[in-house]
Length: 214
Image (cartoon, rainbow, N blue to C red; front, side, top):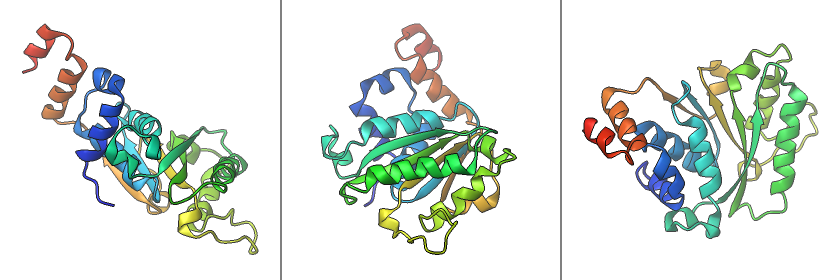
């Protein structure tokens, strides 16, 4: 399925007017939503960027908008329904907690039509887990590679279409061994045009402020 960065965010944001009203549709937001709606549900992706680069906003838009045939936007009806399983990483994260969230998502997906539905595990602040002495990210490798926990040779390897999808959000770049297991989108500092566009979007209801940014 082909979708451009202009199509997907436009559809999802139009469906939820509150996002359009309060959030600027800058390049960063469009890229993050495109990755979360096109790449994330089909495979694995990692969004890397400083706070304020629309990572969490994109995750919320994707979770609220991608409802399969129940979506109000015609383009989004052609995408799978997404059920998001969020996991807040920290330095206290453990391999078992990683496996548990994937198992929960897998159990929820197993009785669904996988041509129309996908469970997506979304990790927030992945970089904090990377610093954990418990090494929780080691459990992530086999889960992304073959859908198993990697602890038993008898584990059944899941075909790609039966695995749960994964989206990671991080404020800084991770170990290449983590990032090369899926699509990585890195957002740098915004240029002057993006800053102006963001200001116009935030202040669009304030006529005097909007005129100052034009």
